[in-house]
Amino acid sequence: MIIKFFRNARIYTPEGKPPSRGADQGTLRIFKRGAMLVQDGNIEAVGTEEELLANALVKKVDEEIDCEGCCLVPGFVDPHTHMCFAARREEEFSMRLAGAAYLDILKKGGGILSSVRHVRGASEQEIFERTRTLALSALSFGTTTVEMKSGYGLDTESELKMLSVIRRIGRETPLRVVPTFMGAHAIPEVFKGNGDGYVDLMIGEMLPAVAEQGVARFCDVFCEEGVFSPEQTRKVLVEARKYGLGLKIHADEVHDTGGAALAAELGAVSAEHLLAASDEGIEALAASGTVAVLLPATAYSLRKPYARARTMIEKGVPVALATDCNPGSSFTESMPFVFGLAVLVMGLTVEEALVATTKNSAHAIGLGAECGTIEPGKNADFLLLDGETPAVLAYHAGVSPVKSVFKKGERVA
Ligand code: NIG
Ligand code: FE
Image 1: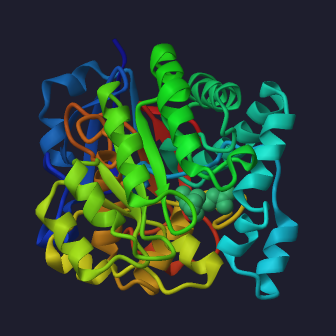
Image 2: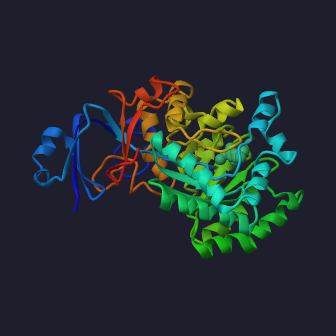
C-alpha cells in the first residue's frame, strides 16, 4: 500500500454523480489551500490542508508532495479523437485554405478515404508508433484519458488492425484509452453508390468480429448528408447495441440531418459535433441523458460557425469538449487549445469549460464513476497548472500551462 499526500494546492474540481447540466455545468468545488490523500493510485480524501492534516492516514504517508500553491485540476478526458492514423493530410489542408469544401474533398475520394488508403497500406507497428507519438503529446498537454475511434480501415481486417493499435496504446502508455468502433465513418470506395451494401457488411461481418474480439466499448456513426443517412445510422446502432456496445453519433456536423434527436431517441451516450444542430435537436438532447460533445477545434479548422454551446447549457444539455484530433478536420491533440476556444470564442465560463473537459467528458465515454473529478474513490488523475486558477488555460494562449501530469498518483509528464 502506497500513500501519497499532495499539499499546498489550489484545488478546482467538479463534483457529484450525474453529468453536470444547466447551472451545475458552471459549479466547482474550490479549496484555496487544498490537499489530497492518494492511496494506491486512487483518491482517498480531498479537502483543505487543515482538514487533511487531521486525517489518520497522514501519519502513514510514504511521500509528501508540496504543490507550491499551483492550481490542481482533474486530468483532461478527451472523449472524441481519431488519433489513430497512418499519415497526415497537409495537401488537403492547403486545398481547404484555397477554398475546397471538406465534404467535397471526401466526395472526390480524398479526406477520410485518403486516410483509409494509408491505414490499409501501413503495418500495425507503423500505425502504433505514429499513434503513440500523438498520444504522448496529448498526455503532455494534460490528457489522462482519451477515446480513440477506428474508422480509417473500413473493412473488417483493417478496422481490427486499428482497434488492436488502440488497445496497445492503452497498454503501452500511461493513458487510459477507450476504444470506439467507427466502421461507419465513410463509405469505402468499393461500395460507392451502395451505402446500404456497406451497412450490410458492417452488420453481417464487422460488428460480429469486433464484438467477438471484445475490442471496442462504443460504436459511432458519421450521420451526414452524402455519408450515412439517419436510417442507416439507426440500423447500425440498433445492431451495435445488441452486442452491448454503447452508442455515439457524429451528429449535425456539417448539415442538420436530425442526428441530435436520433442520438437522444436511441439513448446514445453522446451526440458529437452539433455545429448545425437545430433547436429541436437541442431540446431532444436536453430531455435525454445524452451528452453533447463539442469540438471547437473542428469549427476553427473548417472555418465554420461554432456549435451553440450557450443555448445548449441554458436548455440543460450536459456539454463536454473534445479535440476531435484527426488528420483532416482538426489536427490538434491539445485540450488547453480547445479550452481556450470554448471560453474565448464559444462563450463558456472558465468553470463550465473545466466541467466540460473533465467530468462531463468522462461521462461521454462511460467513465463518470472512475475519473473526471477530484473526489474520493476516483482515480488520482490530475494536473498542476502554471497559474492560480483554471482561467490560465484560456489566458495563456498558444502554449501549455500544464506543468505536470499525474496518472493514478504517478507523475507521468
Ligand atoms: O470528426 N466527420 C468525420 N470525422 C472526423 C474527420 C475525420 C477526417 O477528416 O479524417 C471529424 O471531423
Ligand atoms: Fe470526429
